[in-house]
Structures are given as structure tokens and as C-alpha cells.
Image (tube, rainbow over the protein chains, first blue to last red):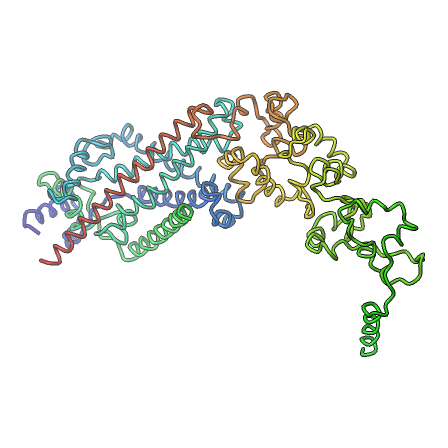
Length: 298
Length: 313
């Protein structure tokens, strides 16, 4: 660690107006907060409902696969699987609706800055395209790894894919759930489109989450077997410097102390809990994906 | 025990041995039973009366006084016999004691039995409905109104008759889930494209999973009185669709029944929007997985390279 950056950290932890009692802490051991508790809970809800939706929907999507009726029987048959599917779908829709309204509330009522543009925003920006091309160059050995900010372009893609997917699948799912009600406004042939889109979008989502997101977020070299940040909520100083050099520089820039991002390292129990939840999620997801691969190559 | 075996052996010698009495010939039998001459022109023509009425082969006194046992067709047609034994007809006759339930001769005839390929046979394709209808008169009435019966009467051998769906000898209850689900495949032996498109729907997928709560062919088209949609009396005619769909979907309206129970995403003329959705996702899904597959592959390659580089330092 360079003396300059250690000074910067000291400034962040002990802002001039803090007035807190000086507690001896090793600033180098402090973690950087990445996800607050609401975001972590949201991810767990999305994760659990997504796995449940996949497991209860796949018997229908792959109804000719030999495992289809047995997977449905796990939920008490087609009827039970349907009930679980609708419950999970409604929960996911509510969770996403809560998230979207929370973002708008924070922006327009709470006056929070930087939600729709800037280094910590999820909105795609020119730097994402630059970083994408930078990443391509790095892949091929023509340049260094880009210095990422708070969210990388593949993380933004993940985020928008979930939002887009929930919107499409949720709308189609509601139409299929309540066709009689839907028929007061929509023609019946749209139910055919809804079923097709629900299945196609499901294939896309399942493939994307269980392969692309699992790889980018967890299984890739450097993170294998999993990245615990979504469960613990914070990253170590070293990790931040490695993965998001631009954010690291911004947070530690002299004169711009960003209060509230420093936090204690996650405790042993939090880490262990993260590993358990992560392992269960990854195992279930990869198992479901294995069933799909089996159904397709059979 | 040994005495019994001795008696049996003696009896066998009596039957098989050279000293046994000659069994009566067909002409002997026809002396009295001249009304059974039909046997000669039947498919069993080459057989002797006593081949089926076996107890008489060893009878010594004629005319025989005791009533003879029922003919056991299964002694030759054992495979058919065991199939019949598993059917609802055998169950009704043997277990439920329903005396009117049919056994072999009720459908095939007795002495006038013909091969099923013989147009005069009671079980010839086009005559099967009459044979079954001799008991199932109500069903026959409905079947006769349907397009299948019309085709059958024209001699169209592709048209199904009773046994094509219900089988000839392993007939089961038609109201069980198992039967209802299996019969869809039977419709598909002729209407293959229609059943394939049905498999694309929620109805088709749920029934394929083995759950019969949702519609299969007969629920919308009817089982026996099937008519083409162009016929206003058809359950799937424009005039009756709302009524038919409402049987499962109470509250179905005109807009609701615009649903296509046999969609084909590849058929542009059938539904342009569905076709467009199909094209869109066929571009999006491989595009997305191709892009990120390459992205992840390159990432993996670069990370491995950097790691080995680091290790070498």
C-alpha cells in the first residue's frame, strides 16, 4: 500500500466532523460496502423465486423430457407445480415492483443523486462501451484490463436482463394465469403469443442465469467457486483495487471522502451463511441446467 | 394320489390309443345340427366340429344327452384370450356378473365366423360400428352423425372405426385419465400435424405430462360425433366455440375463443405476430448465448493465461 492511499483511507474513516471516539482500527482491514441489506435481501428473493419458477415451469416447457412429470411430482403434480409457480411469480413481480418504486422514491422523494447517471448508476453510459472494447482488447492480449467503476457492463446487462425478463415474463404470465380476465381487453390469439414468449423468454433467462451469470459472477477464474459479495455486502480493499480500479481511485481520492462506504469485514458466520446460500443456489441452478441439456441432446 | 395318476394314464391311453373310438365326423354332427352348415363356408371351415366342441370327441353315445361345455376359443387363440381377459368386457362378464357383456362369439359370430378381412365379417372395418352398436346403441347413433362414420360408410378405409381408438380385445373404461391421455396419440396416427401443434400448447403440454385435467382432442372435438369445423353443428364451429370453451373456461367470450388451440409459430399465415415472435427469439437466444459464450470463453482463456504468467514470475 502506498503511503498516499493509506492517508486517504484514514481521512475517510475519520472525517473532521465525525466527533466519534477514536477506536483503534486497522483501516487496511476495513471493507467497502457494495450492497446494502435491502439489495441483498432482494437478490435472495429473486434467486429463490427464480429457482422455484424454473423448477416448476420446466416440466411444462420440456414436457416430453423423461424427467418432466417426475419434476412436477416433486411439487405434488402439475396442479401443485402450477400453484408454486404462480406464488413464486407473484412474489418475484412484487419484489421487482418494490425495487423499481424504491429507486424512483430514492431519486425523486429522497433526492438521491447519481441513480440515473454517473459512476454508481445502473444506466448504460459511454464508459460501458469503452470498457467493453477494453475488455475485448484485454481478452486478446492487446491491452490491460479496463479500470472499472461501481458496475461493469456485464453486471448492468445482468440487471437489465432481469428487469426486462420480469416485465415480459410477468406480463405474459399474468395473461396466461387469468385468460378470462385478459380476454376482456386482449384477443385470444395473443394467448398463443404469450405462451410462446413466456417459454422462449424462460429459455433465455434460464440459460442466461445458470450459465452466463453463474460464470461472470461466480465460476470464472478469480471468483471460483463463488463471489460472496452479494451475500456479505462488502468487498475487501484488495478486491476493490483489483476489480474496480476506477471506483477505488474515486473512493480514495483526496478531498472526496465518501462516507458510509467503509464497513467492518464480514464476520465468520456471515461468510459461512453466504457460502451455504450460494452453494445451494449454484447447485440447484446447475442441476436444472443439466436437466435441460439432457432433454435437448437426448 | 398314485391311483389317480393311474386312472389318468389309463384314460389317456383310451383317448390316444388305437383302441379309442373314432370321434364323430362333421357329417355325423350335421345329421342333427343341419342348421350349423354355415361352418363350412366360415374361416373355421377346415376345422372339425369336435376341434371346438372337444368333449364330444370322446363321447360314445349319440345323440349326446348332456349339454356340452362352452367353446374355449382361447385354447387356440391364447394370446387374444389373455388380451380379452384384461378388457372391460371380460371384467363385466367374469367379475361383475354382467351376463350381457360380450364374449368372443358375440362380436365374431359362432359357426359363421369370418376373417376380419372378409367384407362379410362382423368385424370387418366398416361393419364394426354395427357390431359394437348392437349393444352400444346410443353411442352408435352419435357416431353415425360424425365425419368418421360418413367416411367409413363411403368405404374409406382410413376412417377410424370403434376398434381403432378402443382396441378390439383390450377395451378399457374410456373415462380414466390413462385412457384419455393415450387416445390423443391415436388421433395423431392420422392427424399427426394437428396433434403436433396441440403439443405446443398449454393443453398439450399438461396432458403430455400425464395430467388429464386439461383439454385433449375429444374434449373440444367430441368423441363420437366429431364434425368438421365448417359444419355449424360441430363443437368447434364458429357458432359453438364459445359454448365449447366455456365448458372448462366459464366466462369465455368471442375474444377469448380467438385463441388458436393448434398454433404453428412457423406458419406466417396462421398468426403473423406469433411468427414474428418466433423469428425474434430465434435471433435473440442464439445471439445472446453466442455472444456471452464467446465472452466467457475468451475471459476464461485470458485468466488462465495471466495466472500461468503470474505463477511463472
